[in-house]
Image (cartoon, rainbow, N blue to C red; front, top):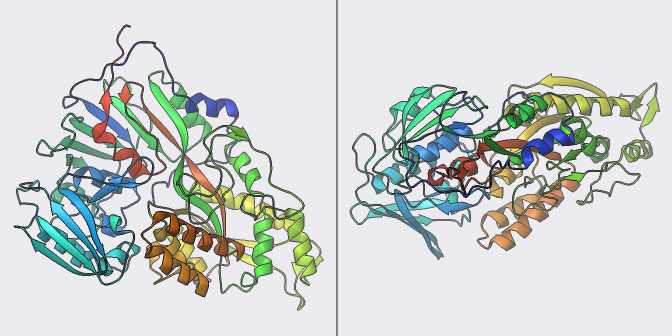
Amino acid sequence: MRTRRSSLRLLALGAVALMTVVVPLNFSSAAPVTSANENGRTIVLALPGPFTGCTYLNGAGETSTGAILDLVRPSAFVTTPEGDLQGQGGAITSAELTSLQPETVRYTLARGLHWSNGALFTGSDLVAWWQRARRLSSVVSDGYRAISSLSVSNAGRTVLAVFHENYADWNLLFRDVEERGVAGGCALSKLLRDPSLGPYRVVSATTSRVVLAMNPSWPLDPNRFGHVVVTTTRLPPSGANVEFAGYSSTVTQPFVQALSSYPALSSRIGISNEIAEVTYAPGGAATRRLVVRKALSWALNRQAMIDRLWGSVTFSPSVADSALYSQGQSAYPGFGGSGPAGQATTTTTTPSAATNGLGDCFICAVQLLRSSGYQHRLGHWYNTRGTPLAIRLGVGPSDLDAAIARLALASWNHLGIIVRPVHESSDVATSVAVATSTVDVGIFSRPTSTAVSTTARSWSGASFRDSYPSGVRMSKVVSLFTQGVTTFNPVTANSTWLQMDQILMRAYWVRPLFTTPTVESWSSTLSSVQGSFLVAGYVDQLPSWSVSPLQPS
């Protein structure tokens, strides 16, 4: 997702700076009184940029652009603050799973809703979206390819989807649908030019500023804000009498302190949907060996990394316990970062201190290499043929990727590994470089979504670029993926995904480091604002926000 390509310097945020923004700021004992109607008000919404014209099918799904699309395009389901999917109920009034043999879903469309160009919204729009989506070489198209037929009835208001194979994540489908006949692509002009149908319509759009106006024909949340100004500027506009809400993936001491200087803001440090990780190439001369992957992983003190980056006392993040679930997801198997803690180092003399049984242990890495036949001479390790142990390290483009790489490089150099950094153009490019063994090791941030199957696709199925391909295929993992993606019981499915998770981590093809943090802020007069680890989960609740002016008690 890419919601974060912004600056993050290597620094230590102390407990005082963090505590400044985590606790909502209360300035009065006055009783809040909710305003009856916000149609005449404007809210400024700060999100990570840049904004593009990409559609959900073109990779916008987990980005700020995707969150904006949720406000201007019809969807069967949208994201809750908790990261779940719930029916939007606007243009698509219901989506019902009516059968499992074969899997069948009935979509019911609202009567008489029109696109902004005057065209009637009908089932033909969903059919055109399906036909377009199923042809894509993309993870997004997985569920659409599982549909064998899509039939329209009831004067265009009922659409019946019949699947030829079970797809448990069917609620991912038909998100931010476009009018039939609209071309794909990512040109920014599309955001303004293409017809809209949602709570809002686009008035103007640049890569750093998108202005939305209320769609008076939208049947839900009639008292919503009349105008929304979406901007990449992370602080409230000075002197403007508007409400403000922000979601930032940049957590730096200057930004935290700047937020705390606004007395009318409440804010908190949260967690994102991105897992910072180390991945290993299956075809690398060194990393094809399990012993090397273990040694490289154990040599990294992940808690020390967190302490260097954000301070030793934080609300989040914590050392990762999963490669498939980010820290904010309900099924995450470890600490959720819900309270402050002075986090002690996980470095021990045995590789079993972390709750996932895969702890950090520098001395264990040394002992492992020695017991596996490597010889340590003149500060470096050599195999039995006298070849030095060396790796090519692919590094993602963000400042956070670079900061992590510097810390990892220092640890590996101290261990005696020769490291040659290679800078990649994107996190996806870094993943591809590892999968194709162009580099031996990659450091980047992997996005998770509402469905763990999208993250798990790295290790099963076709290697599309947006699957963050790993190049690794293990028969047991592929079997578990197939089982998980076809299991409708969420408890059983989560058990399957966690089995897959453990296999991947114990094979050391991936070393999850931590879930990256976020900062959320909002005007103290705004009511019903909930934090979310997904930018869409934060933005999708905006139509229900209202102002509670402080009045004397």
